[in-house]
Image (tube, rainbow over all chains, first blue to last red):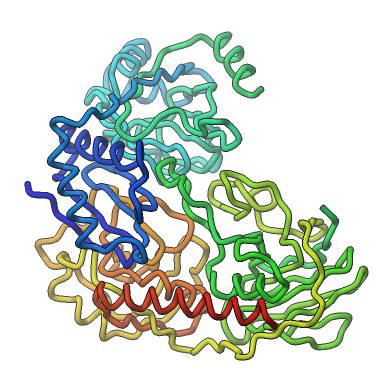
Length: 230
Length: 314
């Protein structure tokens, strides 16, 4: 579809590149975001953030007008074939599955007529595209959960889900970056701090990157947890 | 850095806020910052601070505090009947306080949020470039939380004034806030109800916080062909979201992404007016086009510049 520009107030424009959860559309969003945020800063562009199909550009109306900005974006879009845009990364997230870290692993297995080992295998075999980041700092909206692992949310959310908990809700999987209430079925936990504001890189990935979960032992969890807390 | 004040009674939601945390939106870190950045700026200018010094934002009911060093303070925003050592004092002016002085603020009887600036600014660690409290993310401000009794806050380095500074006018907050807004980004989901939205008067509910303000009024229906929710998209302060029930929510400082459609967006220079509307007040949305909004933005930038110059000379 032709790019659709939407007005989101006097300082923000939304460029919509397609519909639905679509890898090609999201890749276009990622490349546009990367072009806008790397290299020479564009005068008047304050921020560029992508989600599933939509690029949000915050601008300073004292420095750039709406028409000028849409013209710039359309021109940039035309160069996407030739421009060298850095590749997206694949980020490895170690997860200790089951037991205290994954109190719902048995439920997810039972719900799908699988063994818990099969759940762990399937969950850690897939590549998950980060379609968007938001809701909480470092929280990823991931695509690519195996349909054999879908599971309904808890009827009553837990009041306290530990930071790093890995869960499943419907057709989504994700990691809680901060300790918070939550209704996802918990299958494991990562020892990594997904959001650490004092770290040089507060989060470990960007929208458009891919996450792979790697199954680790309780010992390795404890070891990595100590390393990451330093 | 000097111990500046001790909180005696915190009020229901008192936080440390500067003008916001920019450039971290792609990490899911929202802007935060003063809900009324106009009043927060003026408070800083009245005590001779730069725009972006951290202030105390107090919602609905003000705080009580004891000062621990000599300083200039200014209280702006909502009218909260401030008293120092039991004697009424004025807002929108600088006040010299001494060690041991006790400031007490009451309930807001005009407006919703008051700001207290102090010479040198409230000194808390910078987190991702800002001192603003982000309650949902438990970061910034004082340990990422609202203030409680006994908290001691420090102030940065800043000279005391040679003479009192006073704003020559006195902003009053109307019982019906008029918020200029641009249709969209999802106005095409509301073809048949956009006019109804701009004609309606909404009431501010008790559900107001730093994330958003829930309004109640006539139900705003989506067009029958429009979906109830959308794939999550970036959202900004000022977006007016219409969730399933059809009662609008004006999104404020603590959100980055949302899955509901936004019928209109309050222009950036009017968000402070929403921040000063308290439960029971009314809100109306006045349609403006983008070109007009940009003209208003330039005029407002000019007004702020001249106000700042005026207070620097004072």
